[in-house]
Structures are given as C-alpha cells and as structure tokens.
Length: 628
Image (cartoon, rainbow, N blue to C red; front, side):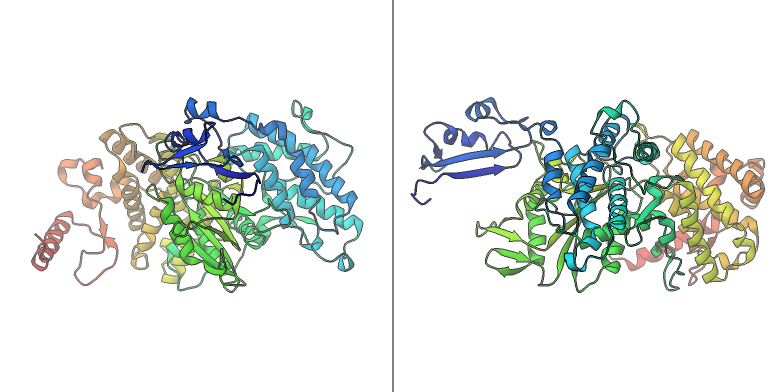
C-alpha cells in the first residue's frame, strides 16, 4: 500500500465460513496483525479497514461476530420505491414526465398487492424476493421500449398511442416477471387476481398494499382466457393470442422423430422472452443486466427450447454461445477455466468475445453443484462475483479480469433431491420464469404431430393411422394413472414418472415396422409392449405388476374394443387357462434381432426362438471378444 493517509477498504463479498474467518481474528483485533503459517507477521496500516458483505452469519463464530460492527439491511425497510425512482430517471427522453408518472402510479397500484398475494396464497417453483421481482418487471419493461429508444426528433408516436403502448408493455412485463414464478395451479389464480386488479378494484385484504391512485387503464387484459395466453404486440398496441404466433411450417423430411420440436404455445412464449433477454443484455440502468432463468420440472423441454434458439434462432455473427452443464462435482476452478478459455483479451485487464459479438453463457442444471461443509456453492459464488462486480480474479496473475459483452442464460429443475436452493444473492440478477408441465391438450397435440409426420413419411397403412388418436389417448391414461397410483416410497424411490416416459412409449412405437402391419391387433400389441417396457419394467413387486396388467386390460377394452387375452392368445399355453397374467405378459416381445441381417423392430412371437437367438449372439460375441 502507498503511504498517503487515504482510507483503504478491503471488501470480502460472499459467504463467511468458520475456517478462513477464524484466521482473520488477529487482523480484526485492535493491533491489526495478520499471522501467517510461516511465522511471519504482517502489520496492517492504520488507514486500512475491512468490510464483510455476507448474506447471513449462520456459520460465523461468536469470536468473529464480536470483533465486527454490524449493519443489518432489512429488505422491507428499503422497499421497491427507491429502485423505481432511480430506474425511471434512466428511461429514454421520449418517455415524457407525464408518462413516467403514469408508470409510477401503475407500479404502486398493482405490484405491492400482487406480491402480497403471491407470498400469501401461491406456491413458487423456486423462491424469489420482492426486490428481485420488481427489478425483473423494470428490466422487461425497459427491454420492450424499442419505439421510444430513438432521438426525440424522430419519435413518431402520438401521446394517446404512447400511453396505450406503455400501459400494455407494463401489464405484459408484469405477467412475465411478478406473476410467472408460480406453478401451473397458481397461474390460474394469479390470472383472475390480476384481471380484477387491472379492471380497477384491488380485492381485500390486498387493497391495503400499495397506493391506488385515480388512474384507470384504457387497454387492460382481454376478458377471455388467462393473462398468460396473450402477448402484447408493441408495434400495434394490441393484445394477441400467443397461438397466433405459432409457426405452421411442415417439419423438414430428414428429421428423426426424436429431433422434432413441435411448436406450441410454450415454445413460442419461452423463446420470445429468451430472444428479448439475449438482445437486451445491457439496459440503461447500471443494475439492469438482463439475465434469464428457466425453472421447471424435468422433461418440460427447458434445455431443448434454449439450445434450439441459441444455436438456430440467433445471428451467429453477433452471438457466441458457450454451453456449460453443471453437476454435483463441478468446481469453481473448472467453471472459471472453461469461460476464460472462450474469451479473448480486448485490452489490459479486459476480456470478452471477439469484437462485435456478444457471448451468451448457457448454464444448465444451475443448482446441481454440491454445497460445501458451510453451505456455499463455489461455482455459483464465482458467477455471482461476475454479476456483482463485472469480472473475477485471474488465479495466476492475481489481477482482476473485467469481462464485457458477456451474459447468462440458465435453466434448472425445482430445488429438492440432488438439486439445492441457490443463494438469493445470485438469483436476484435473473428474471425467473417457471416452465410449467404441459396440459393434456398440448401433450396430445405434440405427439399427434410427431406420429402423423412419421406415419406419412413411412407410408403407413390406414389401419394403423386410424388408431393414432386412440394410442395417444390410451398412453395419456396410463401415464396419469401411474402418476396417481404408483407413488414413490422409501422402498420404491425410483417410482418417478415424467413427460419423458410418455415420449418413450410413442417413440418406441415409431421405431417399429408399422408400414408392414396389416392388422389392428398388431398395433395394440405393440402399444402394450411399449407401455410395459416403460412402466412395467420399473415395478418391483407383483402387486404393482398385476395392477398395471389390469389397467392395460381395461384401457384396451375401452379404447380399442379388444380383449387382452384374445390378442395375446398365440402366446398362451394350455396351463394358462386362457388368461394373461405376469408370466404370460413377459412373453410379449418386440425386437430387431430376430432374423439375422434384418434389423426391423417387429414382434417376435416365439419366446423359445428368441432365447435360442440370444444364446447364439452371446456365443458369437464370446468367440470374437478377447476380454475375459
């Protein structure tokens, strides 16, 4: 340190743990001496001071706490209004003072009651804080102001159009910031609540929150349907259904069934906001880093939506993509090395992607890294250091590396199991959007499109095509019954079913040689086989297996008008008494190895021949293999 008598602060920003903080005890004493392992003692000068900025002191020892002065910031005593005033001052010049007052009154009228309703009555997929929600709304609002981000001379909107546009942008942004961290059931309740508030009256007891001025919204949410079904067309100042934006183009013929992404209302909504986040990484307020976090159960397509848009939907000349997948073993060092390797040196101490490009780092499974002994997650703390301070330290040179033109897109499953709760000091930078599970209509639409595409491509006969709707309906029934009845217990912890299981049944059917099937019974047997491979093979006791066979029996009777015992008659022997049970169901086999040199996935009606064929192949493998 130079010897000029200026104050110097050393800032320790991050979680305190009981090991390194204990080493600081002598420094925190009045004599300010740092004792090293080598026996060396370093004296801090009188002008040097330390500041610690942790989230909590859960693992700090009393010895440390007693040596430091404490300042506790209470979130509710700060509130959202200082952030709002600060942010309004950074809006473009074309947003007049009257417009700003309107936005302020909308914020004070609608946001506090909505947050109270959310905290009191609804369940979030991943926890959020009120200030983070408020900033999320401001960032989305700012990102949609394209018509206002022009020189005042070339601003074209009339006062009336400007007001209509700002109202719509505010309600649209609020829907996808404050109102979208909830689960699927919560969305319906939130939609009704928001419509009632926007119409002019905040229902009790929430009317005590915020300030209801005299302002009335001229362009409120449409009356029909849910607020989540509508998008606001900024250019025209009108509400439209998201479904009007769904692409109707046919799928390219070269795609395999598992590669098809069927456009739905969900793909359209999430891709829209992902696109907005990528193109508005830095907004006018210095706290406005637009980063987006998708949270939802496994199998809802988060990774696919993001990868598809980042790799195919963005201009490759403007965006460089760095995909990162976190696991329980990920360390901060690995994360730092991967990101540093992708960035070029711009000038001394400043790194970034090639000039003219923006680097998007996509972190999947964000909440997977294991917590260390004292509850911190080093990779997350490293990313938080970038979000808070715009860079991190070079571990070799011990100098600070500022990083520019870098933004984050993240996805994760809801906390629980191996997935942990992330520090709110990191998630506060993100706009959190919950990706809800598909409803039955969307599921049916997705798999119906995929089956139709594949059947048409393979020239499947009408007898098979005619059963397509029944196959999807029946799979849906099995899936829903399995979710309701086959619940996980400590003994059966793997009884977890998600949308991927539904997909596996359909994909299994599409692998088969359907173009050579001439009888409906073959299709029903194929469907029963695929259901058994996905659901039955996971079951551990005979009671559950019997339950599934009986479920199949009733669904085949109801939806296909066939009798399970009749369609599997050729697999029964005299002792079975004409009834399909657990041993008989095992004889239903499909495979692609029954005939040598022919790899069609088809029924193998004789179980004895299958065993012989398996033994032949095993012998063949053993003759060729050199392994013991």
